[in-house]
Amino acid sequence: MDYETLGPAPCDEICAALGVDADFDEKNIAECRRYKEMLQKRFPIPLTCDAYFSIKGNSHDFGYYREIVICYYPNDEISTAFMLHVEGNLPSTWDDEEILTFNPEIEMCEVCDTKKGPLCKYH
Image 1 (cartoon, rainbow, N blue to C red):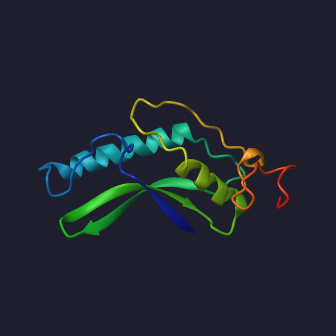
Image 2 (image 1 turned 45 degrees about the horizontal axis):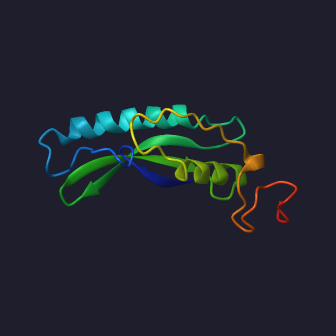
């Protein structure tokens, strides 16, 4: 299993700053929980997909911080395609409540840049 880092909060939002905010740990944990819940709602994981969202902690010179990661199997096409779907459609603000259903049959092929299916000569 591998993972891709998705950050602690949507990219256009101000988040807790390690080494700056006195109550960083509490803010960072709360942000990560909220962001993880948001991603789970935004990207429903199909039963055929072996992937999940998790909070991952990391050490830094200024202390310990957390981020959301998506865990997936890089050798599994559906799992990898789902990770790429998530990574390419992350919400930019807390207000983005759009739900994006993943369908591996209509995802883009990275090789020929067409939709997977009859038009794709590789699938």
